[in-house]
Image 1 (cartoon, rainbow, N blue to C red):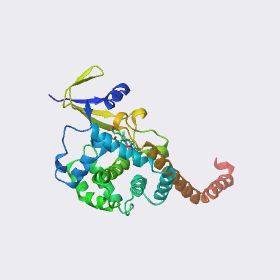
Image 2: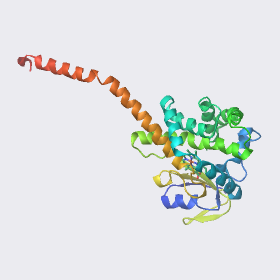
Image 3: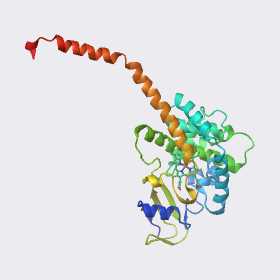
Image 4: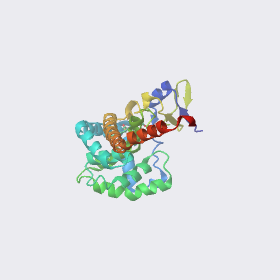
Length: 273
Ligand code: HEM
């Protein structure tokens, strides 16, 4: 019999995310609505969706690629995006630019649908929207990439889209809400973890609520943390500056208003008090 577990305490989260007997996906199971589609082919190549040697190979390529991204350039692109886009779209624009999409701004609605389709728990409608945009996104990548690289470039859009938007919100509001609240693991064999027997096939929902795990842990830990933090800080600075300017533009009427009120008060006859 298969069970579902909820993993929330720090020591349990650490144990689960670093356990070799757990996988990021149920054995060889592609979401049904993706089977036989281009989105499905991309999904199966994602570093995030693979384990073992295949994961290690894809992971090395992604780490090499991300190491080449100059953080000053990342910041500059994020600032440019934040000047004219919704905060929720800045990361998509920034990462879209960095991976070389032909028109990153025009691609934002496709990125939104693609990310929604890959996200854990996506329903058939969300997957259908993702299927509809996958070819357009692949065609917008620089030509000549091999299939693994192309899929994982789109994977970077998915990984950064919603989480970085939440991080921008955190920077703006001074909160530290978890940008990603949950990830999943599946037991590939029977295993005992934190004195609990987990059976082959069991599913585990791992809560990433503790700040220690906002960017994951273990083999699949986020390789884009520095990039995400650079985008979020740059975008939040521009947004805060814009808000400051709006406040400054409306400021001239404030002293006038208050001096008028003072005057009215002062002119009141003392008998009215
Ligand atoms: C606030 C923003 C972000 C947060 C909170 C975040 C968080 C995470 C977490 C928790 C994981 C691990 C998932 C798991 O173990 O199941 C992960 C994986 C990953 N993240 Fe991020 N991420 C963010 C932004 C980014 C950005 C900007 C990039 C790259 C441009 C990126 C690239 C990746 C990749 C490629 C993986 C998969 C790694 C693997 O499976 O080996 N992330 N991220």
